[in-house]
Amino acid sequence: MTGERRTRSTEAFFGRRRGKTLRPRQAEQLERLLPQWRIDLAAAPPAALASLFAHAPNRIILEIGFGGGEHLLHRALESPETGFIGVEPFVNSMAKFVSAAEDAGVTNVRLHDDDATQLLDWLPPACLDGIDLLYPDPWPKMRHWKRRFVNRGNLDRFARVLKPGGRFRFASDIDTYVNWTLHHIHAHPDFDWPARNAGDWREPYPGWPGTRYEAKALREGRTPAYLTFRRT
Image 1 (tube, rainbow, N blue to C red):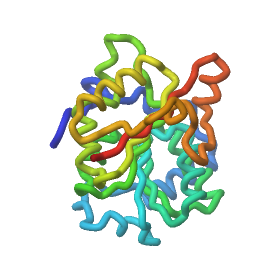
Image 2: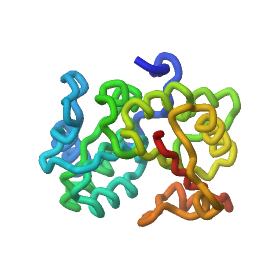
Image 3: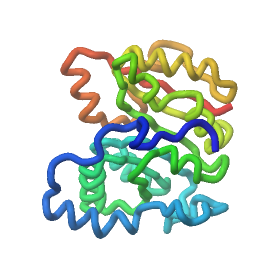
Image 4: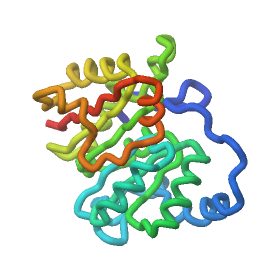
């Protein structure tokens, strides 16, 4: 295993697990669909990750901490030939996404509802075309910076599961976290940042649908950064 895996008894990379009581329909959809879409980490990882999906996708993208699921749902609908794996430990967010995905007829997603490091350590090597970490919890207090998901151990995990040339996308409106991420990428031998001008990090990704976290940042006067790194 590479890097460190947190537990709730120590310090997890994520916060609370549950919020308000789910609406009856959401609770029913979550109970029915999550077992169908959840990746079984108790089983051995398949030699070909595409076998997790019914449609044998030509590309597989992982999104860690998808929150309200707006971006994941948009991408899954936009690219039905691609397989998407979404990670979200917060029950209410998972329920919201599962409900929206069923209503939209999405079938090209698989899910993990716990610590992303568990999934990253289970995945076979060089199996992903991309990883998205969009508006992660910035843990703004200095004493909590060790809980930021971007660190050497997790970048090692990313490097193991990404194909050569695969991309890691990171978006945040918190300057200290952007700088933190650039510092860690610069120090890692398996990633580079191919940006050539300011538009490469100031402009949203092509087809970007926006998220509620981004909308809040813009309302509060913060400027997001959209970083794309390449697995060398």
